Image (cartoon, rainbow, N blue to C red; front, side, top):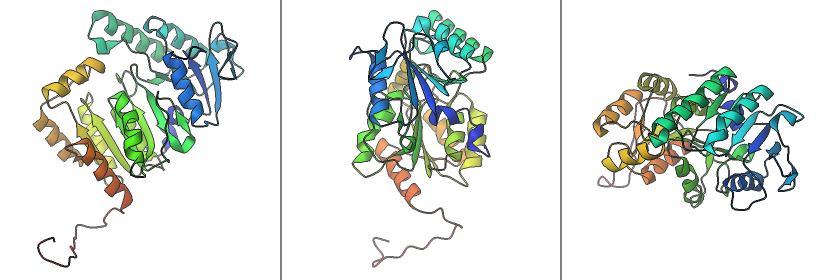
Length: 318
């Protein structure tokens, strides 16, 4: 488990002081424009640099034709681009000195095709050569309401909260914005890991364990790739911060869904029961349970021992 949050590859991804945005334009229907709108709507206070080959301004911000023309090295690059040019653009980011990125673009290994796997391998090699750590590809990035930072395609309307979530389903994080808001809850940080080509759910757990705004960690899991690291990391975290997991890969529908959009490798349901028990993770049986457990665990102090008293006005309810 990390001793300081600054050591995590997710630190500057979740807490950037400046960000270069690729794929936003003045075309209202473009996905990159939608993400930039969501970012600006939360009143993010960092510097935003739209990168566009033709536009001079985008949503009132000065646009730059090339990332190498920027007046500083941004903490983060956000890529919402056609698949074929993603590695080329990440190369330019590396030459500029950018060391953290979110790759929203899909069309990589999640397709299960030889071409998709090869494109992701090229992306990973480019990142390694420039010492870049990135979320994705095929993800929606992060939301950090405490920093007013949101790279997803939905506007965040809740208050900042204490639930930190790492999800292998990208849109699941955004779909919970309204749900949590109904109960006066919110995320401390939400992380969509996508294909986990560089940063995975284990890295996300480590970051959330060190995050001072996170009191409880929620996991939406379709499949675990680094089994031993997952168990060892969770065991180190749970004595200090509870972890609740919702696993969807145990059913045939869940397995198909995971393969279709992240390429996740699911396993038998009973196997994951054992993994969670050995890790000290509480398993939720539904989405409602996931957040009910997080609500209770994040609202109450951790017990200092194994003693338990039930105080009741009647034996039956007790």
